[in-house]
Image (cartoon, rainbow, N blue to C red; front, side, top):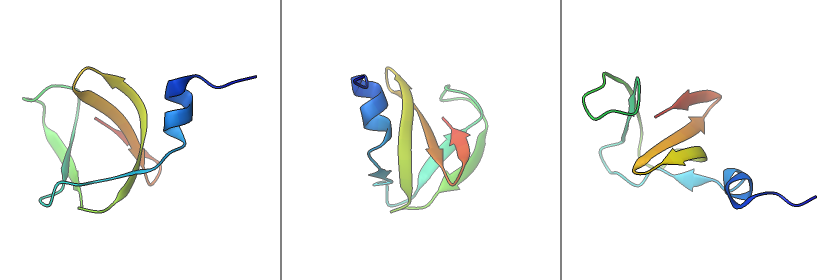
Length: 64
């Protein structure tokens, strides 16, 4: 059984590249409330993407 490209990508860690951190929003909308910031260099995993919005997971929490 082979994994889809997106399922395979989920296993590959990414790292926050924004020096000011990555804003985690309540929903995928630029005007949505910022719930938290993930610091520069933090390991994250991509679990889904819809255009420019990425659904990620870090430390067991899911964010946009």
